[in-house]
Length: 120
Image (cartoon, rainbow, N blue to C red):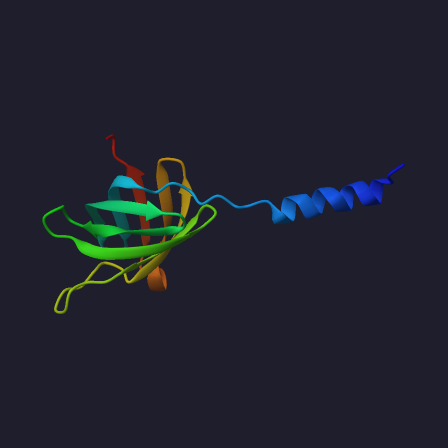
């Protein structure tokens, strides 16, 4: 007969080796950046392969800034890559993905950012 400690050990081992599925961030998103100086709105689009996300963010589809990101569970860390001579509202941020919303702080505590998935 298996003791409680052995059963608990087996359960914890099974949970520790279970794969963590990355959140789904593919699609188009409405973006709001809130800073002490006011709100900035825009759009973003991601394509996703496994735990790697890439796409763009900007005021519109006509003015994109490339972004890349890595997903770990429900955390997405993204980095902007503006063209020379351009600036972005943030360089890096970590987002918590919760279904059709993602939210987090932009680098160096300049403010917060929220992504809301757009209908297809």
